[in-house]
Length: 279
Ligand code: PAF
View 1: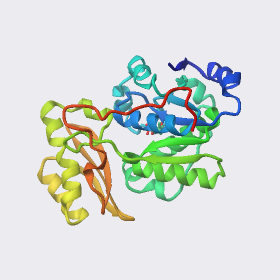
View 2: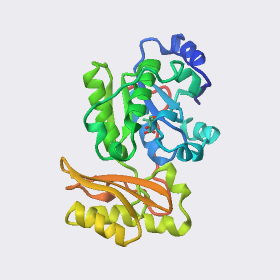
View 3: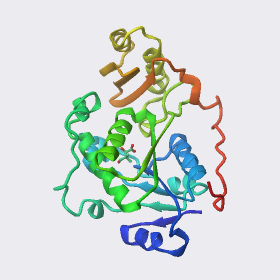
View 4: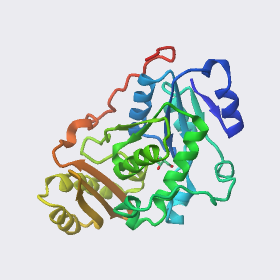
């Protein structure tokens, strides 16, 4: 069972309690609407740390589109049920607690954050890096777990930890996919049944095309609106829009999509270690 801390004061009181002193802490930062991809992060954190903290905070500063923020699903009860076998604490602060400065203080990366996602979502990574630093300061983890689906985010968080001398290990975890290859995302639930079927063509075309340009052309021909498809550092990264839902994905140009694909007709069983187990 997890303890739900509805604000910063409740979390700090728990963090200062005897059961937490001197323990290794793994952090899984999320915006809620948890799915099996988050579950894989939680399971990994459970296996590698004495205490696991899940944060649920829909971060307003990383949304460039207010409509996207308004539509973001809020499912705290379901999130708490999914996290219960893995997380010791669920920390869900209010926006006013996280942005008590009114967002006057920010973490800005001045080069790589402006490419790819950053070029299409102005200010997005400043919002992400700022909130991630705040969550790191709040939770004070030894390790923090991020999905490889948001590859650019993962790289920028690694860069921030290095640049700001933070004593935190950043653990990147493989993308979890539906049986048809679509990367799990809370946005997938906004697709119509027909759109959901079509969405599976995105990773397939991304993987099969000989070049980024060919992938982009094929995706457009298949009915997607392409924001970008680029090959960078041995990976192909892309963002497309379908039924006004924005999908992102990336893969190693040498990898196989099926590596973390969920089995057809069911969830990949993830076995948490018991709460008392230690690494
Ligand atoms: O990947 C996410 O869910 C968010 O960008 C994060 C890291 C929780 C920051 O709000």
